[in-house]
Image (cartoon, rainbow, N blue to C red; front, side):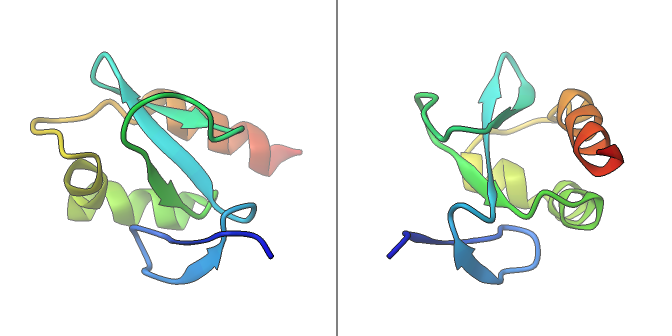
Length: 85
């Protein structure tokens, strides 16, 4: 059985293979597709809706225990690429 994680945006519990792990590098949100990057990670559904919710509510900052504005640009671009395919 796959490990279960909770989306920081919608709070739904899913298998970790369904969710996308996000980490912070140099103040930017980076997708961790293989869930192997070091450091604290936050899990979110790979959808624009959940990403927008997580950013607007400050859920990613809280989950990642960072303060200040995070740059979600690289992550948003990555999600657009995923959704276009």
